[in-house]
Image (cartoon, rainbow, N blue to C red; front, side, top):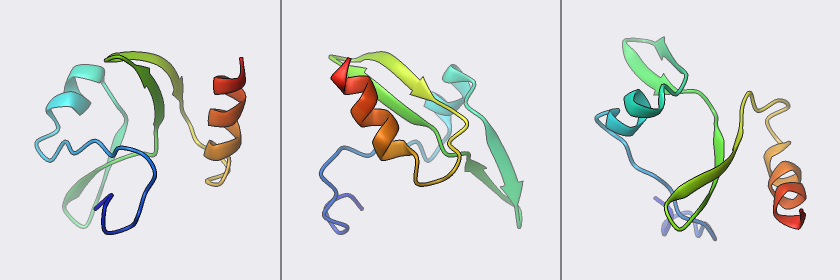
Length: 71
């Protein structure tokens, strides 16, 4: 997906919700599908340094990430 969309960042795939359950990430269900709510994480060498949730408005992530990386 990341390659197809030409994303300049990594995307975590957690189809079996193992990471999601371990981190107690927020989910919701629609049409019988379990989906992960929008969460942004900044990680460094395998350690999660910052978490942005809830993400609102939906276009606020980029500014939040830039501000966190600038600190």
